[in-house]
Length: 72
Image (cartoon, rainbow, N blue to C red; front, side, top):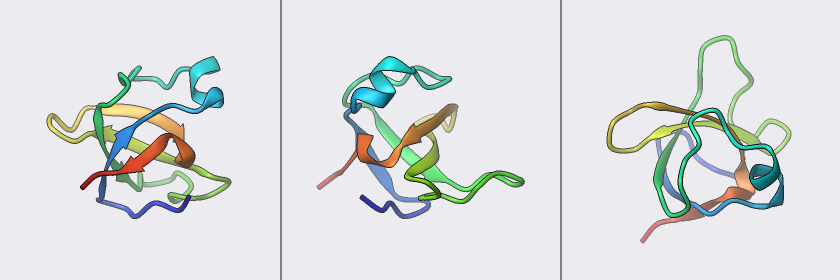
């Protein structure tokens, strides 16, 4: 799945993110915003992206794009 920068998605981790927990340890169902960080690979590079908490803006880490689901 390809994600868009600055869009909000619901976190539903796939096996890779269950085995290797992201830095901020987001919870299942948490709303996350995809971001591009300066000096880091852009979103969707090798199927990964950096995310922040949609409400507070706290950095949550690098996760697999397949762990994100569209919100309605």
